Image (cartoon, rainbow, N blue to C red; front, side, top):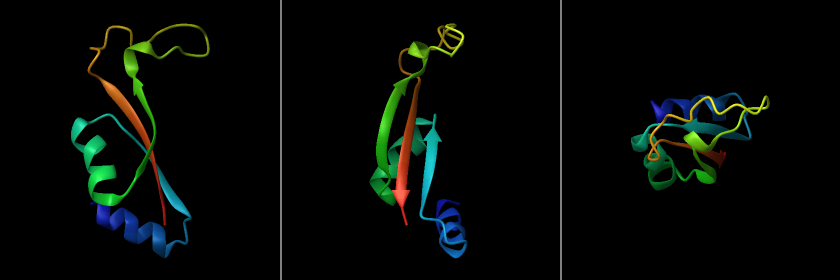
Length: 72
């Protein structure tokens, strides 16, 4: 599927792809197999919403959201 996303993005003339992954598998595959650059790695239970709440405070410390970019 990732190859199809890359092919479609190239065909459409995109400059790159930005992604946020919450799955440990895709968090590692992006940089390791597809040359995505990790921009930020968030521990989700530390997230503070604009209203000051912590909607994911009960998530385990191991739950991460990894934001990555790949230039095409």
